[in-house]
Amino acid sequence: MVMRTKVLVFVGLFFVSMLGIASELVLKGGYDFNTYSYSLKAKISLKAKIFDYGQNIVSIEIDTKGQGKNIQNKQIDKDTFKVFAKGTLPKDAGIVLDDKTKSLGTFEVEREIENIFVNDKGNIVINLKYGKDVVGANTLSYVTGDVSRNVLMDLEYRVEQKKLMKTGAGTHGFFGIYKQGKIVDEEADKFVAAKSKSGVNYQYFKPANKDDGKKHPLIIWFHGNGEGGYKDYQNNVSQKLANRGAVAFAEDKTQKIFGGAYVVAPQADDTWYNNYSKGYIKSVKAMIDEFASENNVDKNRIYIFGASAGGYMSFRMIIEYPDYFAAFSTSAAALDKAAISGGVTTTAQDLMKIRNKPLWMVHAQNDPTISYENTSKRVYDVLSKYGAILSSYPNVKIGETEYNGHWSWIYSLRNMPVNDKGEHLFEWMARQNLKKKFKKSQIMIK
Image 1 (cartoon, rainbow, N blue to C red):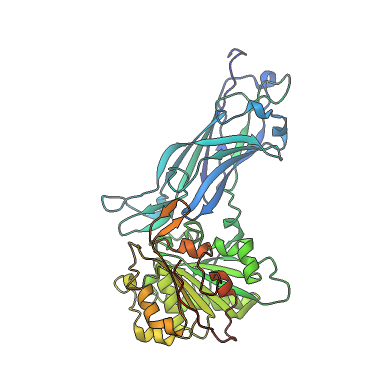
Image 2 (cartoon, rainbow, N blue to C red):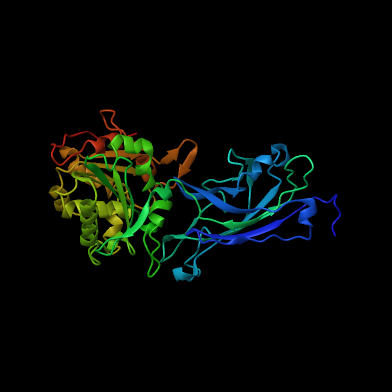
């Protein structure tokens, strides 16, 4: 028997996956719980958020079923628990690592705890340090080489209690046997996974006012090359977790701008560069037709946003179906890389076919991946006289944080680009309509 003066300690282990598979936290120790404490069955959930740089696990919440309200806040601090995390590539991804193919995001670390508190529901919340360069906070790992994908990792978290938590006068401690529930990401969870009759995997969001008797616009988001599938590994989720490309359009402030909009984010089986060779142009168009027919979509207000390889896909969809989409916006459109990666060359003749389509491009001049001069600037030189807009930035920097120069979609998804009339990107897009004549604008360098 351990002496009563010893601090009661439990060590808990639980395993989680991004798909929310349930698992257990196993209690270890030799204490007489009936004499010195009480046990509690509770759930533990991981709280996640999506940032410019991708999804992070930001906190852990222990559901005490209200009993945590009796815990004295002064009895818990960031030293009460330790949190250990491990992220590995899923075995079913079929990825073999070697000197060329490396996983840049896998980890096995102790997560730094910022603070611990009991919330209004009586649950224990462990806030974790997170950020662009915080190892162990991420849920995706970028794999280099021929894979070149953001892969959703299997996560394993281990929680250790290091200090006694008193629950009131005369009590000695708080013990629990916990089961892991789903990972909670309020923004990501607004979306639903689906597969079209044409075989396209996609995520969709429906506006809160979808049943108000009115037709609503539809926003299509084409992800970059890193968010596509890889061989048999088709997760249909990276396109909404790797950046804010899908969720930004479901934000309340964005929904207000568009008057309530549907959002659809398809995932390429591999890469949008294969849009002709594998028929993605037609299968995605069929997916959009299917979704629009099943929902209250205003077919005069179907918009496209695309980044990098998704920007290339955006151009090709508009070129093939110019009378179907109301307008489009691209960020660092990979028109040059597509031509040498399985796609087609977008020629000046192609661009002239869409000269009257509303277009707003965004690109950083220091982009190390896609040539600014050979893509967005080239397109602007051809289409500017017809009203095309180009927001050109020297780099990608938000506040004091500088990102990879290729990530100019951060500006787009934050609705930062402004035209010469003081109109922001989303507001400009929201007023485009197939029934209205497109009005020309000018380039605006911000």
